[in-house]
Length: 297
Image (cartoon, rainbow, N blue to C red; front, top):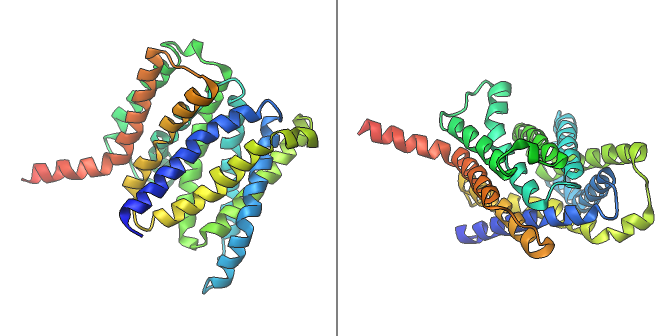
């Protein structure tokens, strides 16, 4: 595969993820948030299981020790992020949800600092300021104008960041499909348990939301994972992260076209600052290397 083809796969993944926010929003007209999380994860798990079995047969080593526990931990982080995001999107717009979720990129370096004792690059700090100002503007210039759902989606970004850190630790096991299948199984069990305790369970409602469940479960979860696994072999991580972060723009575009959502001028300025903060964090190491070379000269 050529580099341009890998980049196109990453753009496709970003489009799928961006549009997924619209489907997550419309699904709430039929099912509860936790039931939706359980259903999408079950579909993703079922889609990945045959691939995981094949991966196990082709692997030269036995089932890695520790894979089950770290996949379960990742599933817990994924569930908390997905549940908060899904509950929040009941009242938050799909546009806001897309940009607020992207805050996980800014939060991740600080979790790495706590867990791995690796201090973030200096360039992360201005990104934090930009993201806070961006959130303030996205709320119309006052935090008080945020819907309760917006705050839940913003909090979910912490758990998405934790999920990134956990996944990074799991790469040493070299069983990415198996890892994801186990992870989604854990999310499905936790989501169904929460739904049984707090939401009405209806097969009729699930049937009404089958398009949303199929899209988010098959395309936004199972397919995009496969696209990333292929593309990351040919595209450097920094460039891949930048391309994938465009999902926020596709979320806003899809919400504009399909749901008729609109942002105020202040909201667009805030969204732009959040996106700039995300890009700054992702390109930080490259910028720092360039500055070091300039100082050396």
